[in-house]
Length: 458
Ligand code: GDP
Image (cartoon, rainbow, N blue to C red; front, side, top):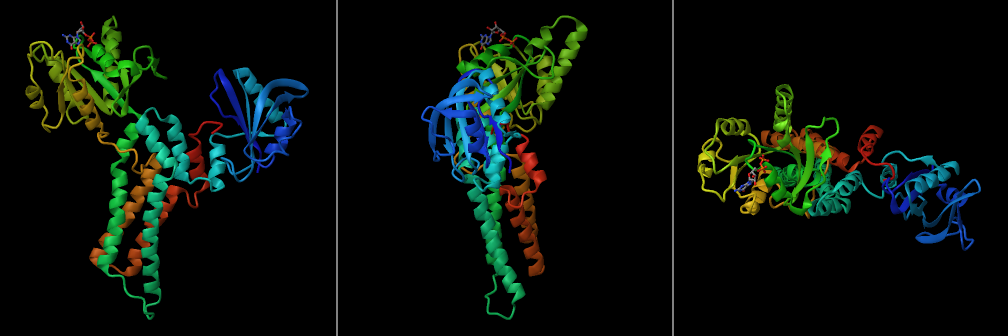
């Protein structure tokens, strides 16, 4: 096993920067670049101890630093680890990294520290995935839910389902293999009850996935409506002090800006398409409008803004027609002025009758609490409970879906009276799919897929 190194902190000027070394040669490599003031070497130092000294490279002193020693298996990776905390200047940290490379370590791949932690049994695959989700968390619910997953809430739920199924399968197999022994037959009802119980728990996990994804990853949202209905005012009212800095979306030109706004427990990624229409020149405006429409097609949530103080125009009706069948909240703005259009009038335009219509005054702040609730309901995050086990990736969802389809097959088979053997094959498939979720017998291909999304140094 090689000894790997990477910068573990952000690549930006900061008070402290950490260079992390892990592997069988971590202490020896560390001793080649670090000399403590006390004269004690890292190799002579016990785990969870720190030394103060100097980092050097080829006779040149690079910085003062603190070196922290972790001894295998009591470290993040389960290997010997040295963390060198130096001054957090961009150049200094990179120079320390180069010194450690010169001393014999090799650069870590993305997520390689966590991959080693997984391979050494420090965490399972679903917990490893929670690490990235926790780092990306942008709100309290996301932090709590991903920390719960890292702490094993999902792993325990999956292990419990899996063990229940494995016990049923083992009992079943014994009964099939040794029919002459006095093993009491498991009644179909008992089996149905056991399998059905696990199915309900897996379904509960699946049903929380979308809401969890919205809480963890945010929601692509568009704010649409005629000029002057109050979109910009609404955006300001929604964002309050949480409004993010406006950034250009990579890959698009100057005309679509994106900003994030925290609404209740979700982050909305809002494409600010409002400016597009005011672009001068027919051709450019046409392209702009087309881009806004494309963005609307892709969005998960549409916030359609209308002016309550004016009768509905043809443009408004066309916009509402495009919202039909979408996750949409219609915002009747300027509720402080005499109403020329009512919520009931809008609702009748939507065949499903389910689209939320909320009257607000973006200028005065009236109705904003109701709007936040309507948004949480539209994206399914209302009442989201971060303490419950949560699937954090598509890969995990896929494993649960596979387990469920095998369980459904087993239950259908039982109902149709197929042989015990055939039912057991399905239960085994379900057990296998749940094992895949937590990474049992994970292939290199699966591991590469999981860890490629990590940052270097994690
Ligand atoms: P946009 O073009 O859709 O982004 O609209 P703006 O946010 O720029 O607002 C257009 C005009 O409507 C401005 O003069 C706002 O002050 C006014 N406005 C926005 N929201 C309200 C509201 O809730 N009530 C009233 N009375 N005026 C509003």
